Amino acid sequence: MKIVHVIPGSGGSFYCGNCLRDSKYYSSIKALGHDVLKVPMYLPLFSHEKDNDHVPVFYGAVSLYLRQTYPFFKKAPKWFDNMLNTRPVLKQAAKMAGSTRARGLEEMTISMLLGEKGKQAEELEKMTRWLEEHFRPDVIHLSNALLLGLAGRLKTRLGAPVVCSLQDEDVWVDVMSEASREAIWKLMSEKAEDVAAFVSVSHYFTKLMKEKVKLEDNKVHTLHLGVDPADYTYINSAEKERAIGFLSRMNECNGLDILADAFILLKKEMKNHDVRLYVSGGHTGDDHQFIKKQKKKINQAGVGSDVIFLENFENEHRHIFFERVSLLSVPVRNGEAFGIYLTEAMASGIPVVQPHLGAFPEIIETTGGGLTCGENTPQNLAGALDKVLGNKKLLEEMSLKARKGIEEKFNINIQAEKLMDIYQGLL
Image 1 (tube, rainbow, N blue to C red):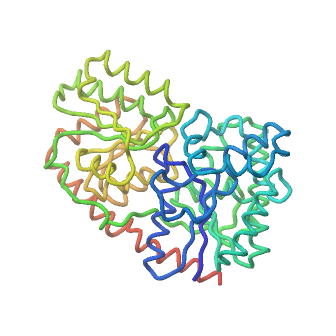
Image 2 (cartoon, one colour):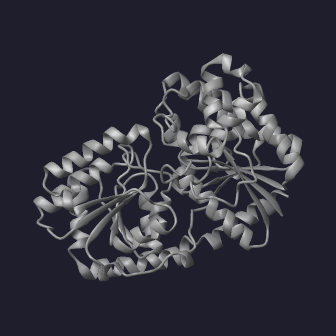
Image 3 (spheres, rainbow, N blue to C red):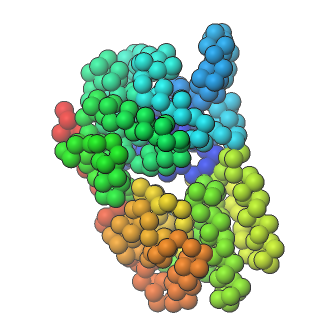
């Protein structure tokens, strides 16, 4: 079967769960013997990616923004547009402030959902024509529902059913103005008619998106994310130094400040003098002041020597991070649809401690490889971290359950076969 995955990229500037999810499915589906193509949008997928250079980055973020914001750029010569869409320029743009910020992009989000009737109709035609000429798929898989504006044109011209993943669309939409939110959810609901099947990453998010987008029950499949256990070295956390890890984009939304406050409590009031904190996951220009504030707070508390910020987080650097860490926590303020960092950590034998929000309880209960700490406060988080780190037997048991849970419940090779069954059902 020939499958195309249309994936918005992050340019490698920060840990992108959606990019990672799609790339892991790509590898597993290829291993099953199918022909799969990754088509990046906006930005390149990862900073290190070399095997996808033959595929253009469609809807280049720089030219897209300039054309939407400044009408006179619509008449810019083709050579200028091509220059803006080169991978080096796009990767540099990914590091800049506002490159992945929803607020301020309401008009563009709506225009994208309008598809061939939006301001980016020319880009949609470029993508469609390129696929017609280079890779006519049997199935088209969109990375998220913000891309639903592509579905109608791609389905009609390429004659293939469209599948759409559902993961954290609410995080993007719900920070916008009320009028924009209503318009976007309404447009998504209308454009959902062009999609043959939706694949949600958790039962929690399936329920949420059915309500927001008015999706039919028989169109939505729940398929938990997975990783390949063979890609991760298992080390029981009870055998490591006591170290907490944070792996996600370093920003307020993901609760780095909550973890920093919890770590200070853990060190100063709960007397865990030997515990260290490793922070990784990257950032954009929008996050610089926030990170600077956290570092200042940590240093003023006198625990700066025990907090290590790791700039590199891709490939081998992430595995080095997992070797050092014995417990992971990413206290996302409003929860998440999934959180693939949890499965990466658990595959490495690292238990997780998360707030009782979003899909976190669902994932932790399924594996037994961690615990939830109730309300998302530094005090609750510090107490839960102390409970696990202070009980070596509990840490050992959770570490074993974490790895076993990934092998049995969140194995990408098993999930890829289930995804293929969904594709086959549409054909």
